[in-house]
Length: 506
Ligand SMILES: Nc1nc2c(ncn2[C@@H]2O[C@H](COP(=O)(O)OP(=O)(O)OP(=O)(O)O)[C@@H](O)[C@H]2O)c(=O)[nH]1
Ligand SMILES: [Mg+2]
Image 1 (cartoon, rainbow, N blue to C red):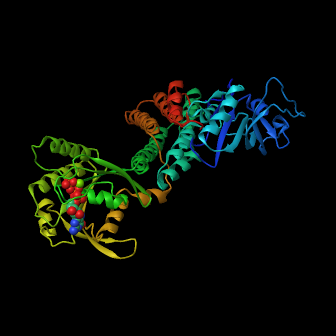
Image 2 (cartoon, protein in one colour):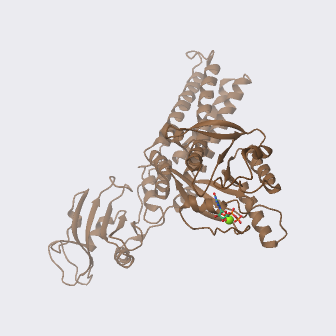
């Protein structure tokens, strides 16, 4: 049941591995059985000699990429005057199995630029390579048995990571954190399977008294661990993809001002006219190590005006999909029915397990709405002391897990409290410092959920007092579900689908 080792890819693939834009350097990667031969045809050393096929593995050389004159082929010693020099380059030569793909690989470091890179790629393709598909280099590393599927997926996650947290967990997975953990579960299961098999084959020499209870305890522990991985990975997912943070409030509460403040931009139009924002507006912002997908919405209020109505519907829809709601209340205005309505919506979402923070905004102006008035919206509001990272203590109000912060865009009152609350709510620091193993995608989570289910079935059989031979099938199912995370026995279609999401040249 080893990983698929199918190292005999027939064709040689090539692609530009760096971004197709004007840049200092660019890399064209060639991998496959003819990589060295193709490199040999199109590379000349500093004295215009054809030498690439003689270079030892893991070496890098200065020279030229040429468009060879096939009518007058040049030998290892001769110099052809008809070859056209395309660029001055460095080439590196790697040989099977010690390369990224496990195949013979030649990498050409040329100057950057779309035209130049394409020109070199054309020469490479013209001399026997085929254009690589997205992710095909990494797919070959997987098929060559160098990395398992979880690690291959981590490569893609690492490339697309957009925050420090995402980078850390992808790198952890690339280095094997998920694979090792999954292997550990699998060896424990395999041990039990082997024991059961032996005990059934040779009942005289294996005493199974008390075994089901022991197995049950082990399975319980394993299930707990897997469930914790699933919960952590949900928080991990939010942190990795960005916390969907939706700003809600009645018209003029300061929602667009908050989006601008958090994104350090003038992205949203801000005026003192109620109803300025009519559509939802999204902006990705970084806050410390966190990534927020911030959504500004139209002020929620009763209206018959058709465009506004659509805007309000969109605001409510956005609130439904939020991980975090920021509810802005205008303290310079009296509390209104709209605030009541939005407060009810916020409480509903929190009841469903979402997070919310109330910001009593415009605290720099003379207050029409005070904390006392807020109690009519959130009756259980009580003051709590919050220890700030700076060591200072600050008072924040809280009602049923909804903190309420005195805020102002003008003098940035409450800004550090807001930042700290968000970080705490999403356990950012805790998750990062625990160095936990994160399942980084839905495919892996699904496999773990299935494994948990199969193990729970074994526990059910134990509880029902069934005999040992009934345990094996479900144990085996859990074992193979976990194997799928590593890429064992997965369908070709799934492999295709996973790698097709990669970028070209990786
Ligand atoms: N003094 C003061 N004015 C603020 C504060 N926040 C926002 N404002 C002002 O309040 C007005 C409305 O701000 P917006 O950000 O446009 O409010 P909004 O909630 O997006 O409004 P709509 O898009 O109409 O729903 C603007 O004139 C802002 O300058 C604040 O903390 N203090
Ligand atoms: Mg607005």
